[in-house]
Length: 379
Ligand SMILES: C[S@@+](CC[C@H](N)C(=O)[O-])C[C@H]1O[C@@H](n2cnc3c(N)ncnc32)[C@H](O)[C@@H]1O
Image (cartoon, rainbow, N blue to C red):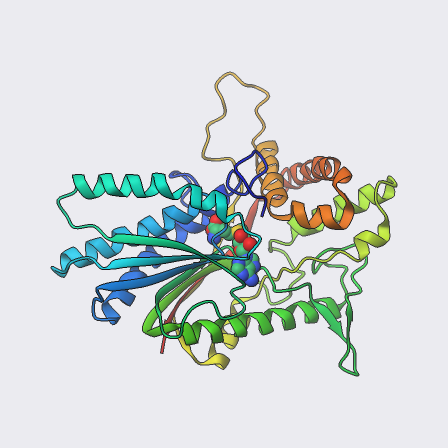
């Protein structure tokens, strides 16, 4: 994710994850109630502990992080009040990869603590005391002490794989994917590309479950949301991969203009996978550490329907606005990866082209993509 707070940063381009108050279909808002309920269930299951430890896995750096933590505090405060208990002290671990811009994230903390302090003074109800720290590392490995977490959640992160999938040959050796002109599973990809992605996801997700299984206490809960697919066939619409097909097309257009080498496009693949609900259920069952309390697919859209068309602006084009939002979000997420593979010089033109293709796509198609919400309880 792009660091800092500039125009192209993740912090400024993560509205789809949290949305504004009017965008009920946004990912984090959709999962808010599930997160709050599961946090309270974890609190009760631990017989209302005086200290509670929670973790945000793949937190990134935007305002979403502290908003999600606040919502959990509120739910725990309310539950404590109803149970006539003192709210617990809460340790919050914010996890992301070591390259995440933790400095920008930490710089938001003084203001956050100041606001909470004010709330503490103004409120008649007792408030949670929170202690927030960063945990750099991959969630596809151990991050926390055994049996130390009471609640964990992850929003919009688990579709990222630990590495670009490789194709396995019959002798067991692994070679790069043969996915000419594409950067993810597309209609034109050979079946081996799908198999390689599915296998990598299975490996990663099972490791994720195994590690969290060791770190959480019995009766604790996890709430996960990430991009998923409705169809069993990974290349059949409706699915979110149009955004990668169009980015691949933008790259190939650049190659046909001689601005980048076609071989560079052929060798670029995303460490990304959108699993189906069945694949997820199978993996959770095989691991056997968690029971599924809730699993549901939901749609998120990029439409600019939160804003009315600016008055008297006859040129206002909501499709162009959706395309710009999507292009900026993808840029915030992928810019560093694209720069290191294709070079910095092509980035501006690439995203101009991508934005144009997205606008064209949105003029004929809905700007929706599918996500999944999973609530798990440690057995
Ligand atoms: C789209 S952001 C989501 C951020 C935030 N949770 C939200 O809802 O706005 C995805 C985040 O997942 C992080 N991520 C990806 N793979 C990860 C891994 N293996 N371990 C920890 N974080 C990871 C990325 O670095 C990125 O910050």
